[in-house]
Amino acid sequence: MKKQNPYVGIIFWTLVSFLTLFPVYWLFVISVKPAVQLFSTPGVWLTDPYWGNYAKVWGDRLLRSYMLNSIIISTGNAFLCTILGFFACYALSRFKMAGKESIFFWTITNRMAPPAVFLLPLFLLMTQVYTIGEWRLLDTRIGMILVYCTFNLPFAIWTLRPTVEGIPRELDEAAFVDGASPWQVVTEVVFPLCRPGLAVTLILTWVFAWNEYLLAATLTNFNARTLTTGLSEYVTSTGTEWGIMATISVFTLIPALIVFGLVQKHIVAGLTFGAVKG
Image 1 (cartoon, rainbow, N blue to C red):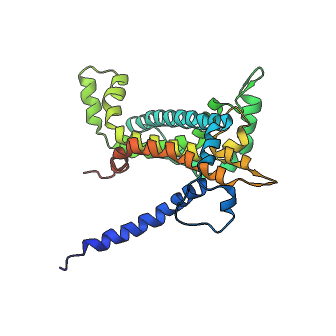
Image 2: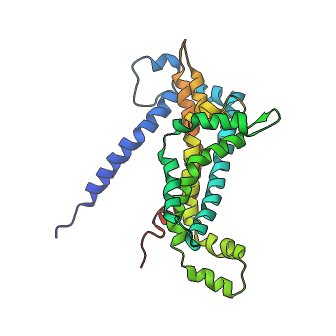
């Protein structure tokens, strides 16, 4: 058999990487150009960068509050969905329930539906039902964390299902024989073995909440407004500030890259855990 030239694969994946990363590079180039240069013939190569856009964005107290809101909402939703999804998967995998498969299918239908379908009922719930005196869930961080659970919790359940089912029940039984309580079995036996799947679920739900725009633009006004919705403020009747928008977009990439870097070693293991059963 003729041995394949290794340089062919290197060249191929280099080109694929270039095509994939070029939009990100171009976004950065736009962010370091003044407005005058953006409307002239743009150059591909980065020369004489202009850092005024970054100084303006970082010095804007309102944008910093938007970024803080995004971090709190995304992180809170990711942890809440991951924990609830884990307990739901454990209950559905370890206990006999009528219509178990129907429950799994019903949860994923919430993820299949377009977010626009839920805008009106969610708005009415947050303004008319879930209220305490003058306080309402609308335009609050906790409200957005719970709203994102509508879509991210079903995804977390379906992501963690093969992980939890891939852990043998004999481990639970052995722990019970040794005198462990049900809570100890869940937290000290099953939970540690699910770490790869939990890491994948955590990062994916975090990214989904971080990038979401429609619900955040509709159900927030000022107090819980996120960074992605802040981009729309720079599209006005007098023009569009492309440099500022590109700079904000770069800032939205940084936390996602940090989170991916922290849990990347668990991603492949978590996606394949429980996929093959002997």
